[in-house]
Image (tube, rainbow, N blue to C red):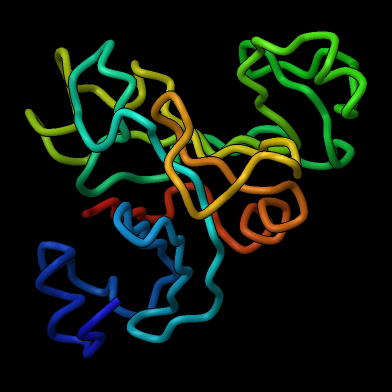
Length: 180
């Protein structure tokens, strides 16, 4: 994470007043790590898997968008570990390796969804770079999917138990910084 003093964080946030004490998330694409911070203090760190195609903001790129985002919607509260989502709705299925074998080509979205919305006009908000219109989430994936290496179609993947911990810790509107 490098430097973590309050002035550095305030500068990276664009100096939002009163924001220093809030809980927020930093996703490092190079390290494939997600860190939950309370102001300048790291509270938890999780391995993730971001886009196999790398960083990028363009619609259709299959890349993970950079910059400041917020958690626009939290989907799946109270659902079972491994709940399968399609179109942000539970299908009634619970993921198992057998289900994974039956539907090998599915891009599994499991357990919970944190739907991200860009905050930087022209970079990750509006037009052909709009993170929310690209359906970019922090979401669960099967436990056998490797983390710590890129592999998604643009989203940020986590294993289910870690995602539940993150989901419960973040309020809607929490800030998320994605960077290389």
